[in-house]
Length: 231
Image (spheres, rainbow, N blue to C red):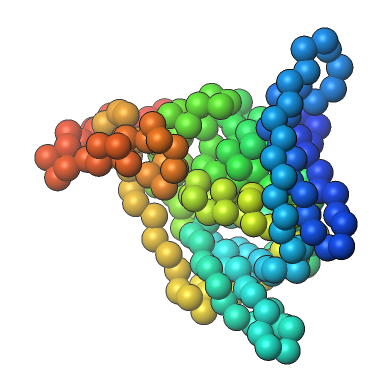
């Protein structure tokens, strides 16, 4: 997905002594009489992590520093979907973040982090803003393949991890290799075959209403045989 540009950044990071202060969930950014704000402050060292996106293998790897201060220690790997406009090289710095952001195609990204311009880390798209039970499940099944317009689609747990742990200033490098990651290539479940409500949720979403968490499907769960419309 790519942002529509209808909403300015919900938050920017302000730094003092290399500590990032996260402010998010601003319900109305500017103007109007009924501005509502929910503020959260989280202290994060901006030098904790270095992110590398292997765009051809559709894997994101997060690195931490070794004893010499170099980012050589693989810490976390994430399956992703890149796309036609994904950068093929270069090093960028994380900028703005949005909890929910409107994308092209009348869909929304959840836990969205800007890398450069319209290139973002975010969840697989949702049909309704603020509704984690409106997942484009047919797109979720494409994780691990090139499927986006250029953004880096992730499982919710991974998009959320970047959102909360990698503040503005965190470096993101793009490259290509047949070796997915020093940690291998993670997998993602295929959910299109499940009926609602399961297929409408990302199985990794920690939301307390997520049926994958509250009432996990059994092997006898009815399977969906209806093919979604192409979107």
